[in-house]
Length: 205
Image (cartoon, helix red, strand yellow):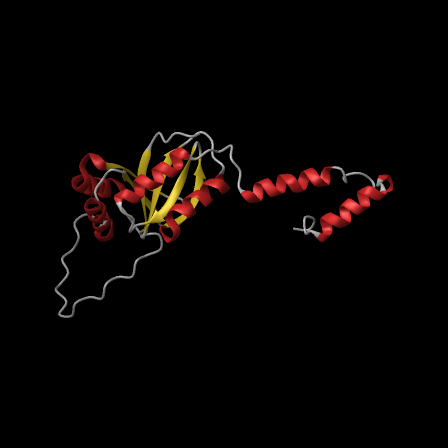
């Protein structure tokens, strides 16, 4: 059973341009010790802000606001007031997703995906692997208790267990092992077995 060694929230944004040192200072001023680092890359214009998972939702909102208003070119110029209130900006791709990072030595990705889906439903977005661990993609709107629930699911994950589909594939392969030989060597029993498996949908599924 894998044990979660590290828990990090990875806020994903898409920005046309940033000044990494300036943005890091701005985030550090808001988050303090909860700020870990920023990472640029992974996809065009993609920005990852990594913070400690025990930070409050208010601090996460503040961090998002810092990134949204970040101006990379020195001092942001003053903008004359607009007599009409601006329309709220549409959220960019990725801004509503949080990545929870866990370092675990072994994982059955298909099984853990099902376990997290059973936990979170629409809160759960997906799962991806990293060297020595996994990223659990969840909706930004999750509560601290949801983070605790995800951590529990990951910590209780047993990579030696299998999904129903994985078990079915093993059974299918076992049944077909006796038929993996030249047709000339097939006995009448082999042919009956093949027709039975074909009728049951085991072959071709």
